[in-house]
Image (cartoon, protein in one colour):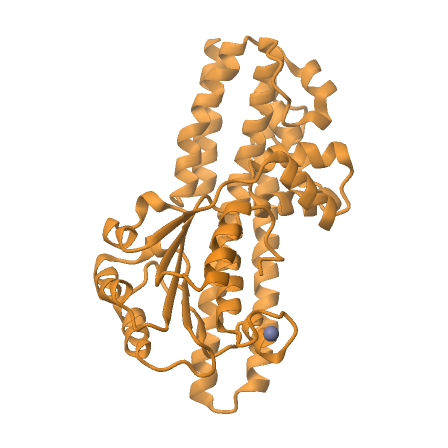
Amino acid sequence: MFSGIPGQAQPKAFFERAFREGTLAHAYLLAGPEGLAKTEFARELGAALVSRCGDCGACPDCERARAGLHPDLHLLEREGDVYRVAQIEPLIADLSLKPFSAAHRVWVIPEVEYLNPESANKLLKSIEEPPPHVIFLLVTDRLDRVLPTIVSRCQVVEFRPLSDGEVVGYLAERYQVDQVAAEALARLSLGSVERAARLAADAAGPRRREEYLRYAAAIVAGSRGSGGPAPDEAFLGVLAREQAEIAAQVEEDLRRRVAELERQFQDKKDLEWHVDQVEARAKRETVRRSRLAAQDALDLLVSWVRDLWVVASGADDVLWNSDHRDALVGAVAATPEHYARLLGLTAKTRKDLYLNVDQKLALQAMFARFEEVSSSA
Ligand SMILES: [Zn+2]
């Protein structure tokens, strides 16, 4: 169980014991920051719960469960901006059914902060007193946004960001990253395995981090470049290209899935329903990954300013971009207070990006405030 999940020793130990001793509760809420593989964790736990072998990992039962094809393991995914009642009602109608082959029926529900009050109300009673064989594994990145009535009826299991050492171990195991880079990426990942994986893939591939850092350095230095586009436009250009690549990847993936579905379903109505589902999922995936790209870009800029602050103030904190030490030392040209002020300006932008405000506008507004602060310095 949990072989694919890096870190999270406490949640793993907690569920392994409950699983072994047969003392699982009926509803858990897995909560913690984005990028810790919580939904994958819930799916692995669910797969173990519905396998008759007790999670051997090798039998057809286990294989089906891990592939997401087991009739006793359900993954509910948000189909629109929120979980609507129309999505919750069939689930509730389904709850009383006996398991097909397992001892349990398990529902994994990610992003429960998106249950609207009406849907949450429908679900509440079932979470409180479900049929004995039912287990809910709810997941959220934003515990503060989950309706309190839901939280209070679940056992909350907290996921924490990985330590730098855990991320370095994870990167060493799965990616060809040298030690110096792995340590820098671990700090930049802020304990998120998903972000560490994105950074590692970038280091081996397009090396966008280098581009972002180069333009971030020019933006902070207030240099207007010679000839070519201004550094802030160049920074946004890198982001635009990255987001276009994301959209193209998701589109390609979607085409492949639709082709698979066309082979699988002969009935036109069935096919249409499944195609609608994968199209909606692709749309959400594009939005999500585009937002993450914008957040990563902002955080790289923040990491640069933060490191300039460290060097300028003579603090002996470890540099996040420790693989760019010489460039950072050479780039310091202002007081620590100046860099601290710039860092303060990034906080609002980070919130805006999370709330899906127009990303380009949010970043442009931040660059304009950077310029104001720099010219008044
Ligand atoms: Zn098995």
